[in-house]
Image (cartoon, rainbow over all chains, first blue to last red; front, top):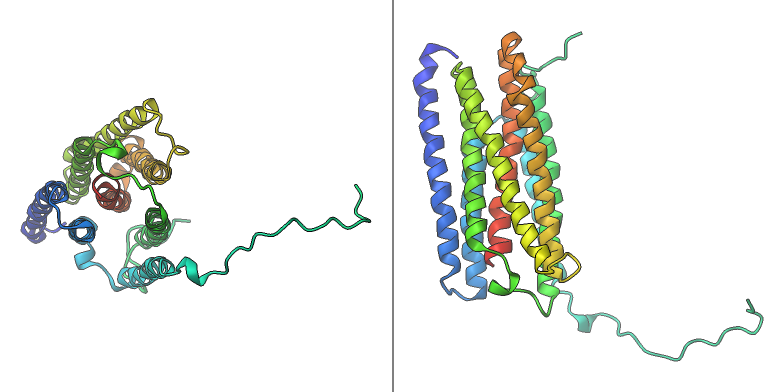
Length: 118
Length: 197
């Protein structure tokens, strides 16, 4: 590393420490929020919002995605597309109500053909 | 013949090869854990007797502590890489060693939790919640073990590369770090989903 790059890199290190503290605070916030009653959907939403922010901090700064090359963004773009597709398919499948499926009709067991003797 | 693009970037990607490789691998890992998370959603929504709160028999303080351990290991990992960038091999050894120790502590706490579950008769076959709990945390723990093996190698015998090819060694630590941060990232979602919600 060049000598002129050193101050900029040391600034990065201060950012890493800031992210670390933010992640610790985020963890405590997640726990605290879970004890507040926002309703079932509200609690899930709050927990996921905090988790997404924490994950963005890890990916953005620790994994250097804030300043990465285009080829990596392309790979991650495809990944995000398929990941979201997977999750949307999951949510979609939850709309498959039982009354839309074919009911099982109970009937007497079929008679065994006479020639079928073991 | 030397392996190409271990240090110098390729013209088309602008990156050394191992970095492209690890990101492709991590993309597949996103889909692996994504499939299990979608299984979790379907099992939870489809269950008429899902376990909530204290009924899960999971300790939130222990889970919170373990989350802190993994976050700490992430900062020590990135500091290990930064130390190499700053040409400080001594600090690299310190931070890399701490990363491996944090991984070990995480696994010990997880083993303690597993022991408690087994002791209370909570097995994967006992309830759907425990089936997905052990699957998700077990797979995650295997990733922690894998990361520790690589990080331990880079801390120990693999560190000899620093003497002959420091830039390539720094790149190896960066790639191992990307995997390690991903393991942390997965836990960031696992903790609230399994322990809190």
